[in-house]
Amino acid sequence: MAAPEQTGRLVRVVDHGPDTRSLILRPPDRLDFRPGQFISCLLPVGDERLTRPYSIASNPGEDDLEICLDRVGTGSAYLLGLPIGTEVVFTGPWGTFALDRAPAVEAVFIADGTGIAPIRPMLHRVITSGPTHPLRLVHAQRPGGSPLYRAELQALARAQPLLTIDYVDSAALHDIVARRWVDADGERGRCFFICGVGDIVPTLRDRLRAAGYERRAVRYERW
Image 1 (cartoon, helix red, strand yellow):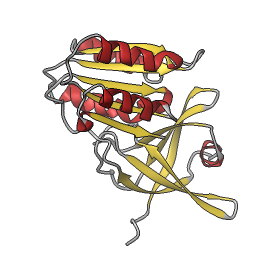
Image 2: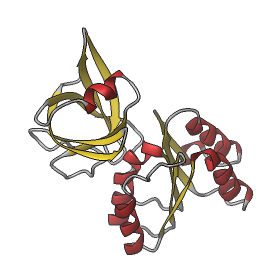
Image 3: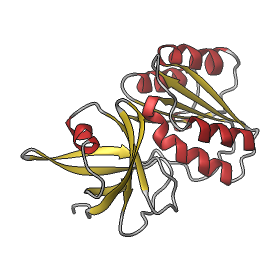
């Protein structure tokens, strides 16, 4: 059975940089989703109807949906060219890369570039659910990149001392993760949430699991 289609009207565009923007969509009814899930947009490009998944960067309970994307292909080019007021058709929410409450162990969130999109609502949910263990965000960027949602997330860290944020170079991300959470100690009770584009995601997943972390403790989403 096909998933029911929904629509969201484009009400605002947030410019994060030359090729990175957030689209704010307003569906007729508030979408019920879990932090970390995504929607699949159905895009009429030429003679095709492309299906493109985009993580939801906004928080559950809000009227609007935010998706954050880079200009990397025909789907994103189409979306980034839409005028305000256009209706975007989508299905969802989808996905098991989700977090409903603060973990009962130390949690490390690793985002490469726009991989911060699903982790942003995860962090908000964790903070509001009363964390009791350290929370660490490692947000990697290419040289010259500007971290998304930086002021907002730093404000979260100031309000919640258990949250620590580090901004690092994407090229050094693997070595940083291995040094801090593999080589530094023998503790293997932490959990990880990893999101990004390309090979870095499965590379980090495999490195952590090979080091002794349980499979279920290393959650990931690769774009």
